Image (cartoon, rainbow, N blue to C red; front, top):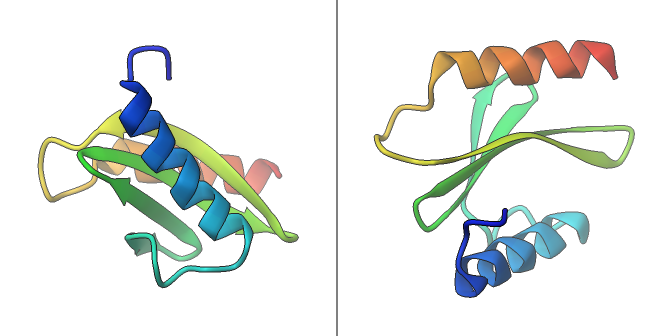
Length: 83
């Protein structure tokens, strides 16, 4: 996250801490496919899944449209099967 502003990094970190504490209502998350979800913070999207009480983030990108790229969802599904 070297190119993010410190404000964006702070917002993302705060939302991740909420997720780590089991709060899935406050941060803006959306179910994508099966157990694959996305965390949207400003115009950034973090794709993740939870397995055995561990949050695995598979990719981060700048959200340019309402639709999440299919390749990102497939990548997360592939990582889910590997874990």
